Length: 386
Ligand SMILES: *Cc1c(COP(=O)(O)O)cnc(C)c1O
Image 1: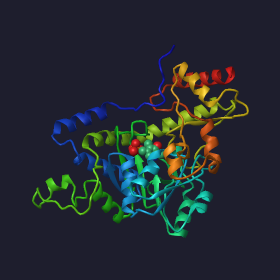
Image 2: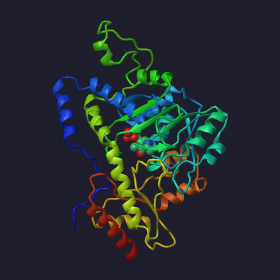
Image 3: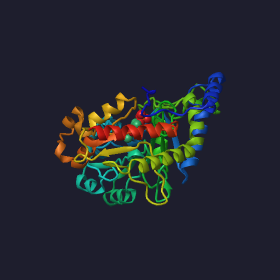
Image 4: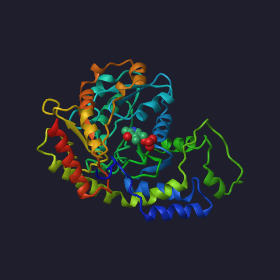
């Protein structure tokens, strides 16, 4: 059997390794100059005059953004059921209620029509998730938010770099956007995330709350003119700061991000060409002139034409050494969310049918042409043996 081809692998080069070693030798390994540099370069990359705040995960970033917007007990937050549990759990951290809605079949993204139906007097925030790196219909979502006086926090864990109407996700009119640098995302710091916002009130609150509710961060304490031992606690904050070790990786990953995206897009187009005659629904492209981050390559098995089940398909690929995954097991399927949101499968027909037939196949920048041809050959074999 050939070597195992995993579903995803990070691409870490000598630059990241050298920068991390430099940080380790420097004597300053927690939040400091490298994190500041990473934030500055990230904000410039997104553009539109945003501020960027590094945190230790996107989950932490989503939590901080909602907290800064004043989400609390009794509030409702609208999110797509077709997402990772992190999008919803942060709502619970604040004592608020996630309200799950269905998605659009073609894009897997939150359906603006379902958003409008889910709005109540308790609704405070909408969290669109740019699935696989394809932008949601932000024009309609922002218009709905404006009409009903709601806030918008974008879960952009997959959407780096992604554009909507030629604007970078992160630079739109939302209240905050949160990116993930988890190991399998389009760039990584091992664990990490970034909050991006154009609103200084949101940025200021997130800055304080990401480090214990202290009014100045640790680095400022050691560089400012006030006595180095002095700080004030103004709120019961969290411990969500990024380390300079992680930021060292981020600085170099960010510089390669556009090249990574081009490689991913090229591979996605190659997959679309090679798989086009099979009984599969393949992912759509971004609108003309826009960028799709291609974090995932989700394929849908056409139930009536494919004889094997989705689970058998994944087993067959696994037997020949190809790692696949499923994105996502929708929230309404998980015991906790099903019970605590009091929802049934029938309320989310689109998400349910996508889930039952979806497979995410390997797509990462270190994959070779021959890896890709091997995946395609094994998909063909699995489908024909059904
Ligand atoms: C990965 C992911 C997150 C969480 O990111 P972390 O950095 O691991 O906290 C949130 N939402 C979505 C949609 C994700 O895929």
